[in-house]
Image 1 (cartoon, protein in one colour):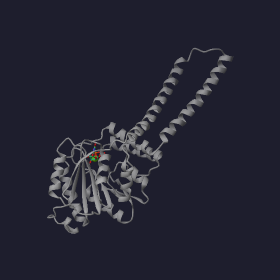
Image 2 (cartoon, protein in one colour):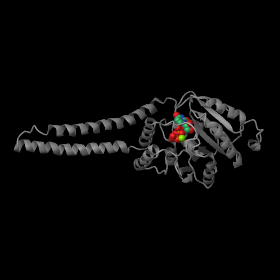
Image 3 (cartoon, protein in one colour):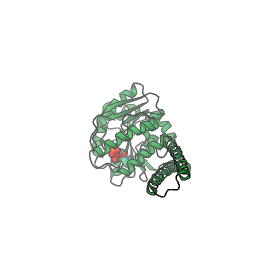
Image 4 (cartoon, helix red, strand yellow):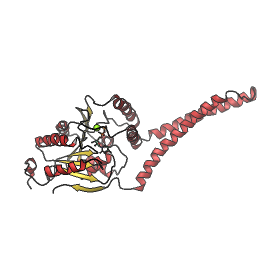
Length: 325
Ligand code: UDP
Ligand code: MG
């Protein structure tokens, strides 16, 4: 096939050696996919570059996969669909898209139209200017305060703990150069946070401001539990500070306890044994118990991740890739 065939709707096979790959994770997005398809293909066609779009169906329970397959039929020149055998989560869906994508520039995007596809050329322009990772931050974030407030807090803690500078970690509209994507794929990490990993490897990062819309249809796939898990991945995946902090707190508490023991000993010698104040002691004890349990939890977070990694089980299983080659 000829290199220009991607712009003519008549093309029936996939573009060869694309310049730009757009990677989109999809989980139960059937209500959003038709509009996404319209807007995304319009943007892709207008760019006048060799583009491919890689959707990963992350084990959707609705008919997302069936819809995605019709996209392959409609635009075989543009669209490829990775089919997972079950749900592995957003970041693994993106990871599979990365493995499959062939472009020199790889753009990620959410399927729910919170990231307007029309902003993609803005990212590409920055990439063309020589950056290797282009992140984005949302101009006017369209989420409830229950999402924005915690996320602002987490952004702050994350920057302190991991030292990774990112204005808006939650915005997935990002572009990466091929070499960055290759390092990410080869890292073999299972519980990871792709934008942070990219930021970590980036040599010339940039950030642009993008529009943000409310979810087109449906509700967020992230509940509080999943959100907390994701942020644990981020904190422990990029830093040992939680462990070190805990050790320091432990040392501080031990020092203070030692002083208390010395004081009690002297008191016993000079004033005599005391029986009162027992509940104060309990209170202190319960507090320390809380500290110990937290510490066990933190250690557990790391041990669990080590265990996952050591088992070296496949990060995800691709059932098939739907494409017209
Ligand atoms: N997603 C996914 N697998 C999951 C959860 C989400 O592939 O297990 C996709 C989802 O289809 C969407 C993106 O990841 O394209 C972001 O998810 P969502 O909009 O639910 O998250 P939020 O925008 O609320 O952070
Ligand atoms: Mg969303």
